[in-house]
Length: 189
Image (cartoon, rainbow, N blue to C red; front, side, top):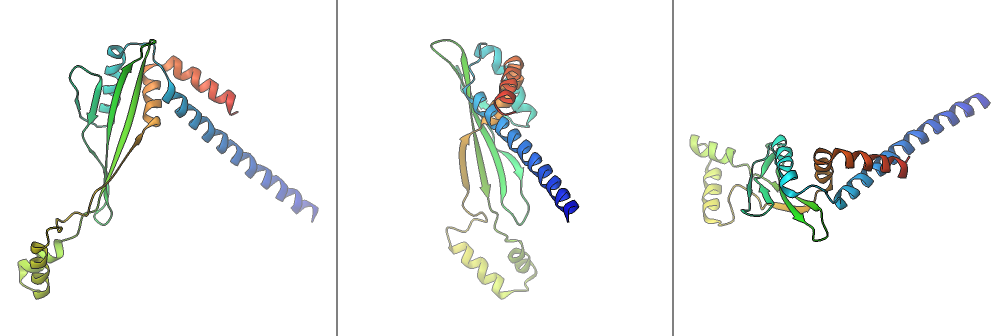
């Protein structure tokens, strides 16, 4: 009986250590993202803007820029989705600002879009082969209905993307990112 209690105690201790390590890692990552969102670059926007474009290009995005300003908006990039599930896509809005007290900041917003395709292949196939009166009726109803388009309404959401802001910090100012990582380890050992 005593041996099984010791084994059980060792197992629980091991599980507790894994959970604490996982928790500390999560806390460090949250700390890094939050601090990256507050980071003020000591470099000018013309110096860091090419790195912003490199990161987005590496992720497969193309974009449009606002002339005379450090603002760009990417095109929607398909993130996948199956024939039965919703198709998803994302885009970014990145803005660089020069602060009056000195330094520059980057703000990144990520947009996510879900689109559910409506399956119309079966109805079309039945009409083509002339096999279904019901299919003909359904297609006639679809033509009458102004809301039938083959796509359900799109769901979009936008939020600040601190994860990409952290990746940009690591790319654009690796020394500051290293200091930040050391601070995170100190704050959440």
